Structures are given as structure tokens and as C-alpha cells.
Image (tube, rainbow, N blue to C red; front, side):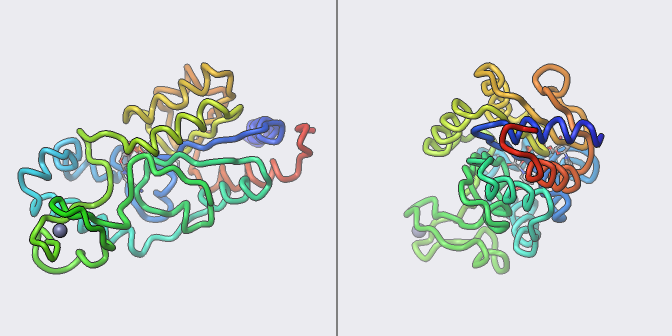
Length: 252
Ligand code: NAD
Ligand code: ZN
């Protein structure tokens, strides 16, 4: 494990442009359950059904009750962990240029990362389906469901539901980051939600080295990843950032 971390850190230290792709697993140590795997929300409800835009439009009160309110409360008190801080450290070292995150929890920004592409939007705000006015989600965590705008329209979180398009600006920013990176860190993602799961494949096709950090193997682990660092993201990212910091930029 030590040796693997050292080798992966060497790749980071040698790189000109490191980009990270993160998923729900990076926030598990902050107390936010992932959708899949042990302890995941998946075990209680079927998010493919509940977190689908059609389910929301059909019965917004139900989706607010089953998914959005609990998630909103959870995110309101969550704090970044060592994995988020490790990515901040790599940015400060001048190595990491951007983070593409599938998470909607805002923890990368809370930790201090400055270039974060929110591929699946954000849970920080809600928008009115009728007049599109935005407001903080914290206004909607108590009271009648579904929460309504002053105009009477239903409010929705500014995340991307299943069945919805990725926001154009996020999609383009992610593509640009993927096209120019020479190392991609893939942290805590099951790599099964498209089109995010395509990013490491595209990066690899462009010649980037793929360093995966996850508790378990994923579809990438044996085909796409050059390094698979198994274990909780906090510990691995702290060690990677420390090791990279101790190396000169030629990796020695
Ligand atoms: P996922 O739920 O499909 O998979 C989570 C992955 O994290 C798994 O591969 C699991 O092995 C790994 N993992 C779990 N604990 C870990 C740990 N401590 N350290 C390292 N890895 C760990 O997550 P996904 O691939 O990101 O896709 C699910 C979708 O659900 C995303 O689109 C995301 O928008 C949404 N989601 C977001 C949040 C959040 O914002 N925190 C939480 C749940 C779901
Ligand atoms: Zn409105």
C-alpha cells in the first residue's frame, strides 16, 4: 500500500495538469450515505425511481418527503473530510487544476477548492418551476410539502435528477478539463452513472494516467485504472497529498 501510494504520488508530482473526478464515496466520511453499497440510500428506496424527474413532476410532495428533505438536513450539517482537504492541498501545491464532482453537497467548495465543476448541479439552492426564481434550500426544510414559491409555483432542488440533461456549462467545462489532464484522480465513484463514468475513459484515451481511490473495485478498476488504491478516501487522499508534497516536480 505504501509503495502504491508512493508510485501514484510520483505520477501526480510529475504531472502538469491533474484533474479529479469525485462521487458520493468521497463524502461518506462526512456522514453522507452514498446511493449504492452498504448503508446506501439505495437499500431503503430506489433512487432511480424516486430521484427521477418524472417521479418529481408527477408527485413533488412525495419526492420532497422521501428524498429531498432528509438529504437537505444531512447536507446542512456535513463538514468536509480529509479527502476533500487532500484535494485542496494538491491544488495549493499547484498540481490539481480542477475537480469534476457528481456530488451536490458543496463540500469541495466548503473545504476551499476553487475550481469545482458541479456535474450534477447543487443542493444549495432551489428554483421555481414556474418563474425560475432561486432561493436557498434551507427555506424549504420545514413546513408544507411541496414547498412553493411566492408565485405559487413548485420549488425544486437545483440538482440534476435522473432523466435530466447535464447543465451545458458544466458539461463543457468537464470536457475541457478531461481533454487537457495528464493525470486523473477518480475518487469514491462507482463509475456507473453516465455520462460522468465516461470521463476517466476519455482521459485514458487522451493518454492520462488514471489513479482510482475507492473502498471497492469498480468497472474501471481492472480495465482503465493504472493505480487502484483501495480503502477509505480520507486516509488515501491525505497520504497521497503528503507524499506528492514531499516530491520534487520531476517526481524524484
Ligand atoms: P455511488 O453512490 O454510485 O457510489 C459510491 C462509491 O463510493 C462506491 O463505488 C463505493 O465503493 C465508494 N465508497 C463508499 N465509501 C467510500 C469511502 N469511505 N471512501 C472511498 N470510496 C467509498 O456514487 P456516485 O458514483 O457518485 O453516483 C451516485 C449519484 O448520486 C451521483 O450522481 C450523485 O450526484 C448522487 N449522490 C450524491 C451525494 C452527495 O452529494 N454527497 C450522495 C449520494 C448520491
Ligand atoms: Zn415562482
